[in-house]
Image (cartoon, rainbow over all chains, first blue to last red; front, side, top):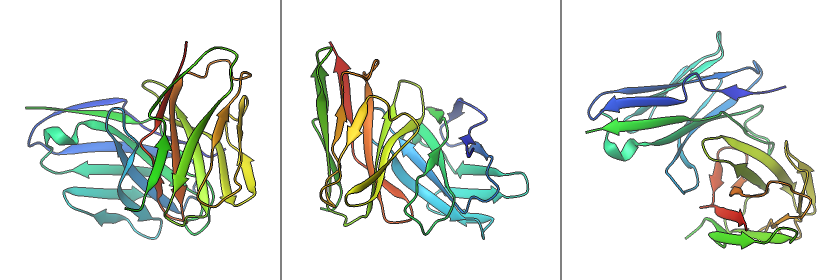
Length: 114
Length: 110
């Protein structure tokens, strides 16, 4: 079945450094991918998304890269700040236009040290 | 403001009791979802609904029930059949792209 996983459960970086959070997915037919940020005790918040017809998408201080050949997704955070400390989840969907379910990975805990 | 509201934020239940978690959205989204999150874990899908009066089981539906009588509302009942109900419950809604989440309900069995 479909599954989305993460390579590393924890990541520690120093303030100001760049962070890279990785995600692997198993369904080559997946059409849409999303990164979420979850702070302690709160619901996940949308960060950025990317469709399968793209390799890269940039937002404010964040970039998502999609490598369909190896079924790998990454989130890059530039100049990481203490407020970026949270759990980051990738999610995957078979077809972006449908109302079907999202599949979530296990999550990566990002800790930013001053 | 548009969004998803979950209530209550904290809920305590005695063993053997059913309890209902509320989820309301004013985003006019067709799809709604319930997820369970345990400490240090990801999100596991309990139930989802793509349209009013219809819903499908997710990966861990046993011990839970839902209804979708109105587009705006998707309540989740945790029944006494759920053997380990203590968890953080998240509701979400979507209209085809990203899902928008509520702030969660933390359920504790005492």
